[in-house]
Length: 151
Image (cartoon, rainbow, N blue to C red; front, side, top):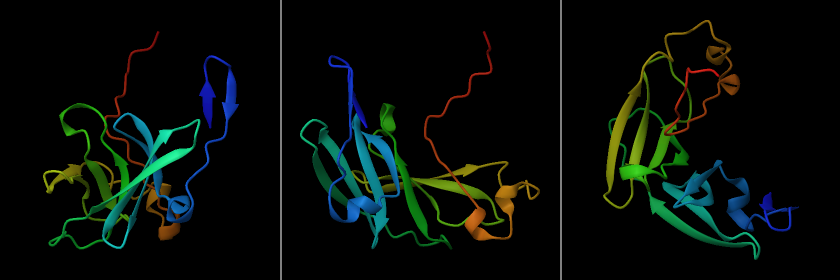
């Protein structure tokens, strides 16, 4: 949905035809709404250029060879702020009992960096770690800030 502040009206944004309808997630890319997904060793990116005209642009980025990692990855979001803008955040498609990590991929520099996330796999009692892999859920948000101050 989009909201026009001047007219105070909502409007449905039409998703582009084809593969973009099966996107992995929505994210912000270069300050614009974007749909991203992983397909055939590539990251598919659809960026909303004009919400009124429902115009989208599409780009595909080749994923690097991720040798040394024993899992398949899925793109979750893009980093849109700061020095790391334009990077994609990849995470394992399936949660495993080993240490959890995400990969930041910069398609311009062809660079991948690994970031370990501590404290997730140690909690076997959480429903997240149910033996049924279909019930395992991960959501990734770069730049998430938690504020412990209450008013």
